[in-house]
Amino acid sequence: MRRGSIASLLGIGIVSGGIAAAVALAIPWLPVSASKEAGRIDFVFWFVVTICIVIFAVVAAAILYSVVVFRAAPDDDSDGPPIHGHTGLEIAWTIVPTVLVTAIGIVSAIVLSRDDAIAKNAMNVNVTAQQFEWTFSYPEAHNLTSATLMLPRGRETVLHMQSRDVIHAFFVPEFRENEDIVPGLTTTLNVTPTRDGTYPVICNELCGLGHSTMRSTVTVMEPAAFDKWLKGQSKAVTSPSAVTAGAAVFKNNGCAACHTLTAAKATGKVGPDLDKLPAYAQQAKQPLASFVRTSITDPNAYIQPGYPKNVMPQTFGKAIPKQQLDALVTYLINSSK
Ligand code: CUA
Image (cartoon, rainbow, N blue to C red; front, side, top):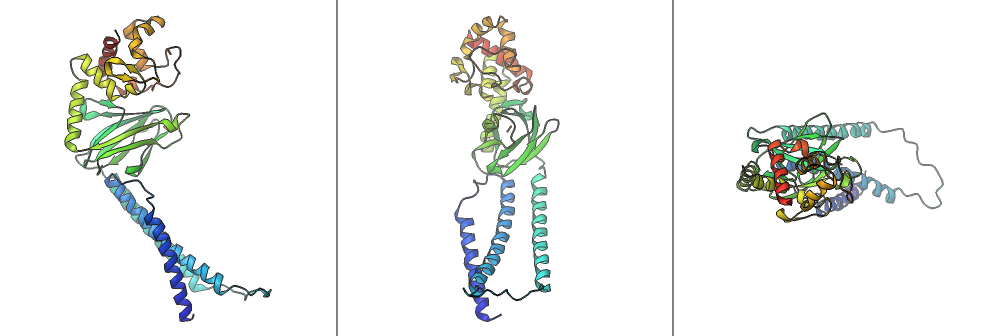
C-alpha cells in the first residue's frame, strides 16, 4: 500500500471518528447522574461508546476511501478481479471483536457486582407496586408509609420491592437502575444517592391501562434533613393524638392529590369529597366508621355515584400499619363532621 493511501485512510478515519465523538459528547444523551451506582453504569456506557466510535472510524475510512479510489469508470463493464479471502484479515476480525466483547463483559460484571454489594450501614426501604401506585415504607420508622420516596444523600439504601398484582419495574433515570417487581418475589435494588434533588420514579414495565400514570418521585436530601423528616414523620404518625397522626398519614400517602378535605387544606377533585363522608355513608346505608375504613382498604366495595371505579389504589389496606390506619380513619371522621 502506498504511503499516500495510508495517510488518506488515516485522515478519513480521524475526521469521521472526530465527528462521531463530537455527536456523542456535545449532545446531553443522559440525565444527570445522581448516585454512585449511576456513575459506574455511566463508565460502562462511555467505555462501550468509545469502542463503537473507534470501530465506526475504521469502517467509515475503509468505505469512503474505497468509494472514491476504487470507483469504476463509467464505461467499465468488466467484473473485478477474483478474491479468495485473506487469512490475515480473517484472523484480525475474529480476534479483535473477541477481545472487545470480552472486555465489555468483564467491565460490566465488575460494575454489576459492585452495584449489588450491600454496605454495612445500609438503610432498608420497602417498595410496594400495584396498578398504578407506588407506596414506600420505612421499617426503621414504625413502617411509616409515603407516596413519594425520600432518601438521605450518601447512605446506601436497599429497596425491597413487592408487587400486589402484575409485573411492574422500578426505574429512576438519574440512578440509571431498573429492576422488575414480580408478584410472589421480593426483588432488591441498591442505591447510594450522591446528589440532592427530586427525580422521577417511573414504572418501566407495561402493566395495564394506567401504566403511563404509574409515577412518583424520589427526593434526595441532606442526611440531617432526612433524619429530621423521618423522625418528625414517625413521631407524627405514632402520636397518641389521632388527629396529629391521621393528618400525617393523610399527607404522607398523597391523599390530597385526589381528595378534597378542608381540614388538610386538600383540594383534589379526582375522588370523592372527604368533607362529605357522613352524607356518603348515609347514602351507602353503612355506619360512618366502618364505611370510612372499608373505603380505604377495599375501595371498590362501594363506589360513590359520579366517581370512577379502580382509580383509588387498593394497596393502602396492606401498606399502612394498623395503628396508622386507625388514626387516619379517626382523623377523617373528626374532620368531616
Ligand atoms: Cu406498573 Cu407499568
